[in-house]
Image (cartoon, rainbow, N blue to C red; front, top):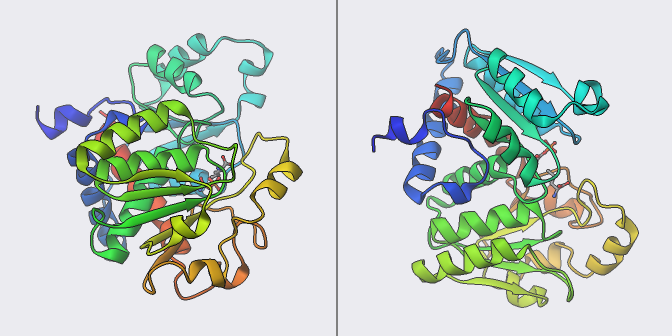
Length: 312
Ligand code: CP
Ligand code: NVA
């Protein structure tokens, strides 16, 4: 199948639906978009197109990076929240999806359950792009892979350690690592774990590629000799047990001492928003190893690549 046929009209719901070759293809295009923006070269490949954005959870990066990127591509975005749509008064998703499909060339959606984005995809002919669900955050995963590629020169062969809520971002990094040839360690307190569907997928893929996929409560073992130290909040959007989580995860902070267990040239990453004094210290996020703002920028370049490839 040609690359065009692989991508045109395809939903972007989880990176589990993409091969490593396809992920690299998206990253190559993102890198090209980054270069074009730096050189101020016009790249309005989606001129005249319309993209709907429906966000049920808070967002800074995802919303603005998509809206800026859509403008660079010459298209127009429409942002809304379910709370202000007839969805809030009981209109079914399947009706909303078929109507949005008539107006727009793609839907970018941030919501709770993965089954919600799947339902939109079922009822829309145009592509649906997952801008974060409880299960996964594939747009973040692409930006993270681009950042690792830029900072480390390659993706495969690195050891990535994730510290924080074993949720959407954690699960995305596990998927990315298992597909792209990185060893992946997830450090969480006893009793906490990523979703089984992700553990099963990533263990099988890591085994195929001969890489490690480890969930452990031993922070030192996890961080030791890591190339990429990735922190995320202890309390994701939608979780009510914030104080309990802060207590349970308190010993899993990335600070100068724990970052010191990684390789001396390790980079520090975080999808943001970050909570200084919880999952990491100010000295780490502001320190010389931090790549978090390049990572945030890369959200825009990778999302533009996805849009340019999937919008028909
Ligand atoms: N990383 C990320 O998705 O940030 P926002 O929640 O601000 O979009
Ligand atoms: N795990 C976090 C990521 C935010 C971008 C959350 O779901 O709130």
